[in-house]
Image (cartoon, rainbow, N blue to C red; front, side, top):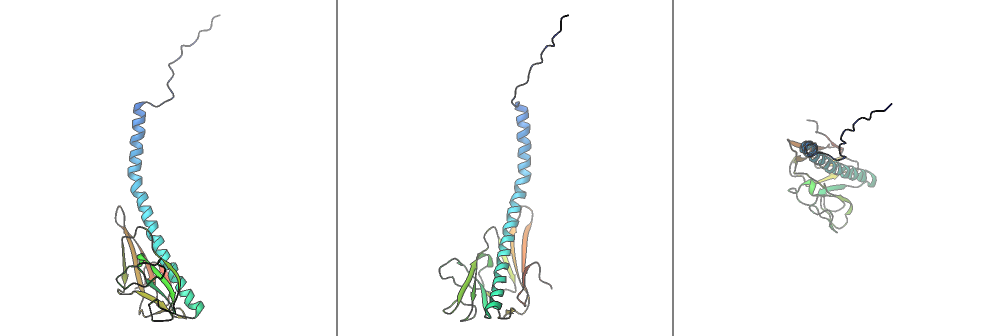
Length: 187
C-alpha cells in the first residue's frame, strides 16, 4: 500500500511581519506615553521626600548633640554649606539650599571663633519651592536640655515640587520641645 503524503503547508518565516511590528510599536508608544509622566512624578516625590528627611535628620543631630554636649547647638540656613568655612545665611535664604549644624558657643545663630561645625547638608533634587511658618527664621537653636530657643510655637517647613498633575508637598514640623518630624504641625 502506498502512503499518501500530506502536502506541506508553506512555512512561515521566523521574523515579524510589518503589521505585527507596527502594532507592537504602537502598543509600546502608548505604554511609554502613560508610564513616563508617572515615572517622573515618582522621582520628584522621592527627591522631595529625601530632601525633607535629610533636614529632619540634621535637626535630630542638632538636638542630640545639644543634649550630649550639654551646650547650645544651632542649625542655620546656608547658601554654601560645602564651603571650607561655611556661614549662616539670612532669613531670606531657603532651607533646601543648605544648612549647617554647629555648637553655638559665641554669638547666637552665627558661626564665629569658638563655634565648631558638626555637619552640613543640603536638599538635593527637584524642590521647586520652600516655605516656612513662622517667617523670618534663619537659625534654630537647641538648648542643652533639648527644647528650641527663641521660637514660641511649632515651626513648619514645606518642601514642594510640581508634578504632572498637581503639587507634591512634604511638611516638616518642629515642636518647641525640639522634636522634628515629617507631617503637619498640630493646630
